[in-house]
Amino acid sequence: MIILSVESSCDETAVAVTKDGREVLADEIYSQVDLHAVYGGVVPELASRSHIEVITRLAESALRKSGIKKSDIDAVAVTYAPGLIGALLVGLNFAKSVASALGVPLIPVHHIRGHIAANYIAYPELKPPFIALVVSGGHSLILDVQDYTRMRILGTTRDDAAGECFDKAARVIGIGYPGGAAVDVLAKSGDDMKYYLPRAKVDDNPLDFSFSGLKTAVINIAHNASQKGEELDKASLAASFSAAVSDSLIPRVMEAAKMTERDTIVCAGGVAANSRIREDLTKACSLAGKTLYLAPPKLCGDNGAMIGCQGYYEYLAGNIAKADLNAYATMDADDISF
Ligand code: KG4
Ligand code: ZN
Image 1 (cartoon, rainbow, N blue to C red):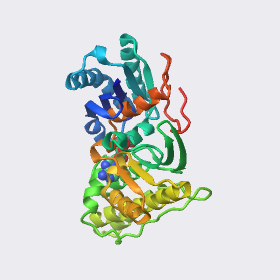
Image 2: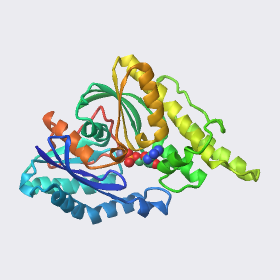
Image 3: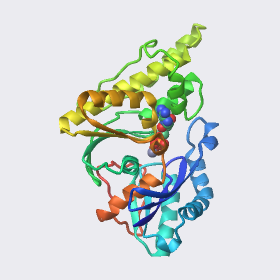
Image 4: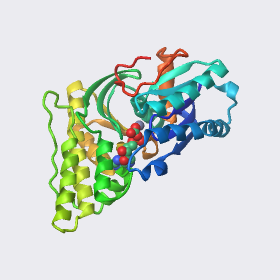
C-alpha cells in the first residue's frame, strides 16, 4: 500500500512516500529553522506562511524521487494533532485536497504516534508491546504502547517539555536556537558534576516529570555568574544540564517498564538524538536486561516518513477520516478523536 504523508505541525514541512508502512520511497523535509532563529523561537504565523510556500513543491519532489505516479497513491496520511493550529491546517488542507482529487482515503495521524513509528521504519523486527519515551520540543511522555494504535500515557511533564528546556538552556548559555543539538555537542567537553542542578520529583504520579525548576536553576547560574563578573563554564553547564535532564527521564522509563513488565523500550522524538540520554538509556537497559530501540538521529526530528508509517497502521485499524477532518492544537496520544 502506497501512502503519501504530510507533516506540518511545527516548523518543518515534510512530505513522504512510504510503502506498506515501513519502506520509505521518498522523504522530503524543509526546515524553517533559519526563519525563526532571529526571533529565538517559532513564530506561528510565519510558520504557517512558510508551510504554504513550500508544501506543493515538496510533494512534487517526493513524488519524483519515489518514482511513483500520482495514480499509484492508495491513501494520504496527515498530522492533524497536536501542534500549532495554523501550521497544522496548512498540511491538513493540502492532504485533504490531494485525497479528494485522487479519490483515496484520508488518514488522520497523531504527531506523537508518528514519532514512535519512526522506530518501526528503522527496526523491521520491532513490534508492540513496548514502553515508549517520546521527548521532543513540545512533549515529554512515557507511554505503554499496547498495540500500533492502542496506547496509554503513564507519565508526562507537569510543565515544560524536555526539548523546550534544552532550547532555553542553549539560549542562556548563548549558543543559538534551537539549541538542543548545540548543547549536546558542547556538553561533551564539560564536567557534568560542576554545577548542581535539581532533579525534580512530583507528587501523585512518580512517572511524571517537571522541568521548570531545572530551567530556572540554569538561568540563575548564568545570572549569578554575570553579576559577579565570573566567567561561566559553558561546557560544564551544558554537561551538568544534560545530566540533569537524563537523570529526570531514565529512572522513570525504567520504572514504567518494571511496573508494566514490558521487556522492550523505545525512544523517539527530537531530544532522543541527545547523546547523553542515549548513553544513559543504553546502560540502564543493559543493566535491567531490557531490549532498547533508539530512533536513528535522522528519524528523531519531525519528518513525513514517520507519519506515513503510523498512517499505515491507523488505516489497518480502520481510522479513516471524513472530508470534514479538523486540526487540533492539543490532543492526548492515547485518546484520539477525529
Ligand atoms: O521532535 P522535534 O523535531 O519537534 C517537535 O515535535 O517538537 O524536536 C525538536 C526538539 C528541539 O527542542 C531541539 O532543540 C531538540 O529537539 N533536539 C535536541 C537534540 N537535537 C534536537 N535536544 C537535545 N539534544 C539533541 N541532540
Ligand atoms: Zn515532533
